[in-house]
Image (cartoon, rainbow, N blue to C red; front, side, top):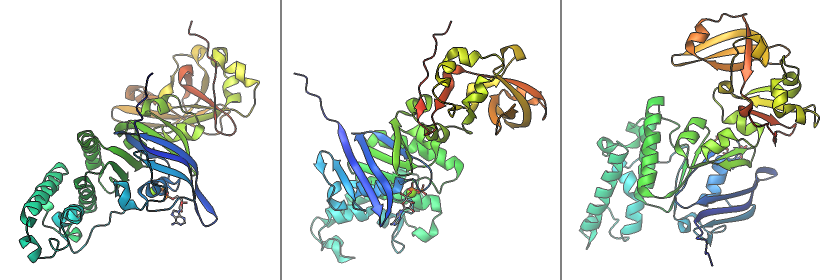
Length: 386
Ligand SMILES: Nc1ncnc2c1ncn2[C@@H]1O[C@H](COP(=O)(O)OP(=O)(O)OP(=O)(O)O)[C@@H](O)[C@H]1O
Ligand SMILES: [Mg+2]
């Protein structure tokens, strides 16, 4: 008999959270695998921090269950969950130095009550060896976060980003089974953020812990995670690898959120009225009958200027050309469309275009999604490429 090894680290089942009459999480189901880097991503207010706080035990569930490492912890206090959480608004002790802040969890765990006393504590039996170990571990964590030169400072003498790294360091030294990080990079400048992203990924690999990471930055979610869970209004709409969610969104909101600079949407009827019906031949015609209020979505990189009107799907007028060095985007108001679409082009193509130029657009049918009125994806049976 094949015995499947259960590698679930965190199992959230039917989790509901209400604050008074307001339901902020509705029936969340989520399995996080052991050692996984799972990112919760979604717009502000969708419930990411609340879900994390419930897993940490800082909020109580209104309904549902949470298990960590196979143990039901739904009613367990935070201490019994072996999780470390770094908050959005990290709380450091203002009167302690960075080194002292980082050593707090280790001192609490390893030193006895008398050993923790100021001054005389270090004279207690075995205290000096334990303190030396703690010091070495704090220094190692500080080095990995590039804050070892700040160990003697107090939090008030640090920048926001440095404080955030101290909070991260304090969580790392605990070596918990599960790490819960709530937007730990939100106060860093763009360059340090990118650096810390790769640092965190490597740190996760080194520590081998299960990590849930919260962000509303889709680039962070896409680049760091083994899987992402996309949340909206207290619901998880989709869970999958970054590529799977990107290439195959289940919901209009997911496609809109995981898209840079944004998802183009058009009424299906507009596409069907296009010049050549190429997309209709490719399968869209078959679903047109199923409802007139379908929406078509495609990303800026899924469309391109067409060589001529003869091979174009749609045409319109250039509103704006944006160049960002290596890439460029043009904003085009298609005939009959309610809002402009964004098309990614080569910078040289953008240079050759002027506002008000008429342009023909081609859309890659393989990268075109259809959504119903409720936002759910409508799957299109595409014809095999000829
Ligand atoms: N203690 C509370 N009492 C009442 N409502 C709350 C409480 N905490 C959170 N909420 C509400 O729950 C919803 C989800 O909040 P949460 O902090 O989980 O969002 P979030 O996804 O983390 O947002 P952000 O990206 O802005 O941090 C919000 O509408 C918020 O106002
Ligand atoms: Mg939050």
